[in-house]
Image (tube, rainbow, N blue to C red; front, side, top):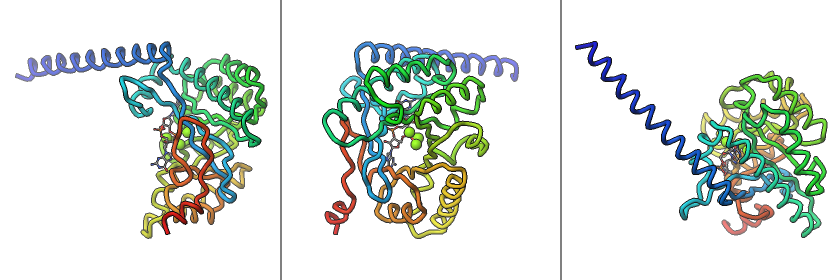
Length: 285
Ligand code: C2E
Ligand code: MG
Ligand code: MG
Ligand code: MG
């Protein structure tokens, strides 16, 4: 009857919880091994000036080379972000990105920046500011060489310490980007409360821009509004996920300062400047 059924389902629930906890423990320990064995890599995707298509910045995207496969963050980042191991992975990413950028600067006359993604836990301890300052100093890079990307999710906890950290980084001269803007736990007040320089408009809004549909028209209203609001607040935008020449045109019309997406370049293991999309047009015509 009901009572024993209830007890039974608790037992199943317990088993599932235990199994999930075990899995998480296994992945966490695999991530620790990955750090020790240097299995993480950063791949770099160009963020271009939407008008000139010159590469302004390379976004560092974490990859895990594991058991013969190259894993993207979808496979492991949630577990990583749920424990303090993300703090170590994050510090490694900042150091590694700065090191590779400094090497790139020695090889070329271009002076692009590098953009590194952050996770909520990295914004809970003020020593993070020292991690950033040390990575810049060690590689003799100016703070303007570094962009940091955080999502609104990283701000929902509303920790005072996150604000303190971001204010320190911002006054140091590091560029702060709000990633995936417009989806999730958006609070417009974040744009004023935190020292944001750049708004990255989530790729889901860009995805429909190129198609001729009602959704296209509606998403264009949203992207236009985000652009207008950002400009009025003294911020600039990046359009994420530009895949087609139609989307490129609309992003230019709307006036986004920067653009990023497969049209300009895929994430690659080295700093590879964006192919000019005019030559992509040539290839496809
Ligand atoms: P994100 O920061 O929003 O990065 C953009 C994601 O969109 C990347 O996926 C990129 O490969 C993908 N992308 C780029 N251009 C296009 C396009 O034209 N179309 C489509 N459909 N997708 C495009 P990826 O590399 O799998 O990274 C996923 C997420 O993982 C990132 O989203 C970021 O939130 C997180 N992540 C990546 N690296 C790190 C890291 O070092 N630390 C932390 N904490 N999170 C990271
Ligand atoms: Mg990002
Ligand atoms: Mg994004
Ligand atoms: Mg994303």
